[in-house]
Length: 95
Image (tube, rainbow, N blue to C red):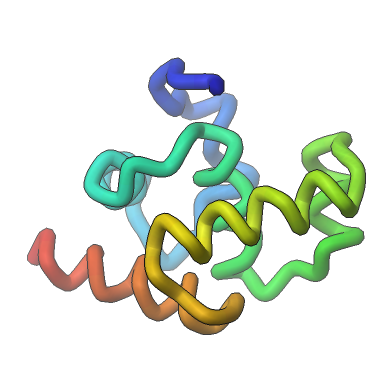
């Protein structure tokens, strides 16, 4: 698992513009997502399809689906909308 801190060059493309960079890092720290899961979650919040995420991260669609499954389990979400909802809920806790 990649546990390196997210840096500007690593997270800007996947970070939803709805979140400031520091806020996004805090949300990820609260959720316990790995860096790759955070990248995938960021694209999910941006409503990207599996194929688009796979292309952007240079991984297979099957790997994307695996990450999404892991994210749903970690966030106790039942679908992609649930992932976005949980991430927004965590952002509200920071306010």
